[in-house]
Image (cartoon, rainbow, N blue to C red):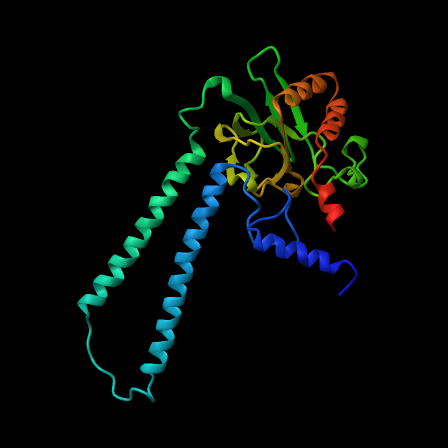
Length: 296
């Protein structure tokens, strides 16, 4: 084992035992979901665990049944097979039991699908922040304060090593993560209902955020919608999840959630200069990748 490998395995074990990663980024060797950041995401993961138990129980039962049949009814153990074509009790059971299992799963999944799609009725208009999201080949752009005098647009492009534009240069020292960090992250306030209106300007893309358990296609000529509400500041990462062309991998999503006062100040800074807004973000909320680097 190389020097430092024990930390890698310790982080992987912590990810498994803790039911998710310790940071808002994918972890090497991780086999579980990332830590949920919203109440809906927590319920989705709880439902996943419930269905996983059902699947494991069915798998064990069917495997045991197959082994028993192979041992009990092979040619050597049962040289003279019985001849019958029906068993009413078994046929009723293998019809009714799967139906009941599916009804139980549907009972849990349909409300979650509705919850992911429809904002709660108690959300007041003053608690809702609308952000329009457009997928492009190959970057995202976000429009804030749509339909007001303060409307402005943010282009979000992936950072790369050796990028010809200095503003697109990947800087690991400040916490940038290859294939995930962008020059202008999407920014939203904590404690508010964030309503995303999502479309595309060219081909089909998909806006996905694993820690929110959200994903929806961005389709030209169609306006889809997502919502989320997060109560703690943080840095979150997602990616385009629809194959959209040769640079599909260049469409990460970086989301910064800030307290309302900092969110308002970020908007002021961005209207002055995108570079000033990025510097402000890095000052008030360093990327969590710095924590990962220090732990490794």
